[in-house]
Image (tube, rainbow, N blue to C red; front, side, top):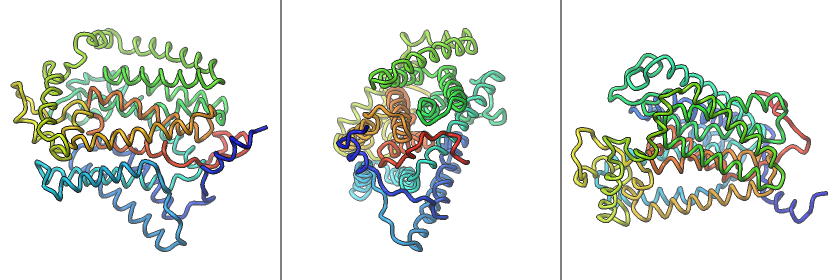
Length: 447
């Protein structure tokens, strides 16, 4: 019998969930999910036309949601712990613009618009993902989407030379690159998969999923994780190791799942065999560069030099930084090496944040991460992987992956990956949804 002292706090955290979504809420929900799914397919939404679509679509969806709220009976907006640091970050950007602290006001303004689109998607999904069945549907859709993208990326990689090939077998990148999947940069593909593969993984570990769907979800997670390794992204591999370590630690120490942790270890061994069989000697050669070239993928091994240059920039403007998005234009005077290549990113998201937003922006990041991990702990401390537990586990594993990878690359400068990261974080910190009392199954959800 459940202890009332444990049940009552859980009930207090639950909120009202409508049995049926309004038409405008449904449009906002499905439209936001569509934007998230299409953004990676548009080369990561890095080109002006795809950025315009991302911003226009998010603004349009917000207008749809607001129109529904104006016509319907007033319902309080759903709160989220991460809204506080998000608003603080927006205030810092506004201060940079209004106070003339940005070294390039125009690019800070355009970057602010892009971040606004992330915020709108986060807000809309926080308001509309209030029902357990919608969260389950989203998990199923994302699992199928990730599996299909992994298969496509693998086929594309096996049928052409990724370093000189064409995205979708059709388009040659304008500035070259290491193609993997729909991305010019294989590291950014790895970053996306780091965030998506924990979703089928957490669902197949859930107590609400039957054996048949569990196998399908495990296959999806296995395929998605294996392409992180096959992409050749060293930062991605390190992030994957960190994610698996956290997952095994959770499953081992939650007092109920040591056997599941052993099964997960077996799946990892099979994944290693599969990736080396498919990747062959090229993958082995790539992994051999961990010791000698851990920071050398940028222009003949200059990442550490760029990091040192970033420190000089931070000392110049330590409080408010050089302006959001201003790194490419502010960096050249501080560049301490000769190169024919244009260094447009710091290849370290933390260093770039300090350069652009200063120490105040970095403190906001620490506040954001503290609230994120606290929310994940609250959802996972019971040890039960129901719907809320699965959301907490999948979301925090995805965020951990991209946070580790951010020490080596610039995934959070890629709009599609940044949008996914913030959405996962918002879902982790969202209030818990009410779960069916019966032992439900993924089969009970109608798509």
